[in-house]
Length: 273
Length: 367
Image (cartoon, rainbow over all chains, first blue to last red; front, side):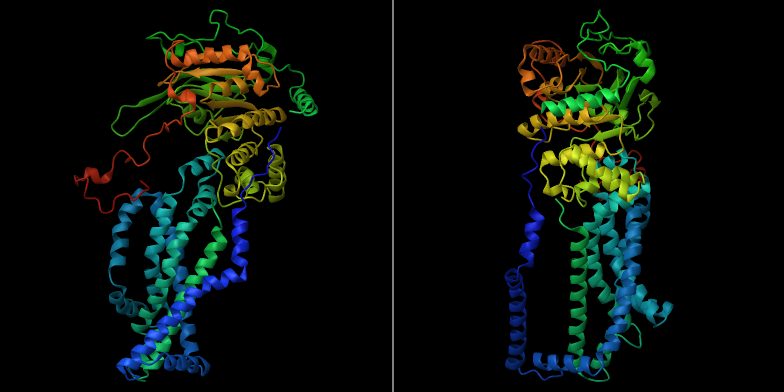
């Protein structure tokens, strides 16, 4: 009497196999390569046509060469490592506290009313203006950068968490309650997993902001880091190709971190109907 | 249904109800004065004085003392208060008993509080007045003896069918091995063996609802509450699903209370149909369904079934030949709760005298 369980859409498997096919991967990569090629060509054309000197706008191959030597002769790595540490710590601190506060905001109208003006105000105040102050309070070491990173990451993640948790389907919550979920279980087993796509959306924004936070923190004062290297290259070394190579490094770090969060998101969230 | 299987089920059922004959609804109703168990409620009658409706097929009193009712409601009332609006009385003085292993269908027009009633029995809503007992013990809050199946499957979209079935066990803190084994058994029971790894979105609507039924059975409840479980299914799946539910019922020892919009579904599935009146919800008729089991779709074509459906319909419309409310055709019912976006009473900003449009840090809910 039981209905034959035949007609089932295996949507996700189909998508998975399609993704793994090499031809498809190449086709996906094509626009990216094409865009990069056009960008570099336009850059080169600009340099050639306008005849800019290297200290104003170096040609792409000059930047590429400087990028290579900076990484091979050990100029870049210590700075990049410092900045990466700052980003990682700052992001971790900022994102974790933001998720916690976001949950609080979602749960309590009172907390939202009390806190949200300050949250918005803190986000609207330019972090660039706050950075020297933070450097003054927390020194020019790792701590001040972590604080700046955490501050800049906080807002998007907290708001995304709040909106995500509030948007959880009430019917799912009622279901969990019917099966006697405690408040804690409700949060950990239903609300947070259900809000995960939204939270990760905030984290995507946050991770790129964390890079900016670290650089700003280094500008406000520091001995090492990619922000410091930019200042050095521009000011004392007068090495514009190195400045561009540093910018390229920062951009690459941002892109890589973004891609990592997207990959994590794909793994954690997976296909949902 | 294969004969061998139904025999097996019968034997199993006998084993479950060993010693106590299962009450069959073919027997005449208890209260001869009200042939349908219709309760005429006179105006001004105090709720406490209202006679409880117990006119189901007669239970031998010995059983009643031995096992009691699976579900017992006494004068249950529940109303909802909206912001500013007068309280909405959803249920008013509902009393009935459901003996163990009976299938009872709740039928009623839109907004008569059928879903509210189910939530009160399941402990999801507290009644304003009256008492709800399941297996002789008072219900206070969500109850492990009650399994809930909602109108929609309400599966967790991020986990597999197996984990969804095991979800109540996870919440109850059962060890992983037990969870897996039990969930596997239940999936087999609902005919979904081999689909444990599938995510909800990979399953059809009927399969999802079957997963929901398996999940409701996970904690081995004595009572299964189903809130229009078929309303989201297409007509064909619905028909098959009814038989499927009866098969599951025969293999488990549950009492079933089912809310439905469909009279034919009620007649097909139930031992007894309770008809609720429009708001405020009251039981207006208690109709035993004395069709033989196991039932087939063809059972519905019989004259007896047609008469039963006619009787239910007459109570629904108030009079025999009035137009029947739209819900009889399975139109979706609107949720009895207030609008989700409504402000709770005592909005702090309103007290400050701030104009309503100026609320920069106001709620930012889903609309």
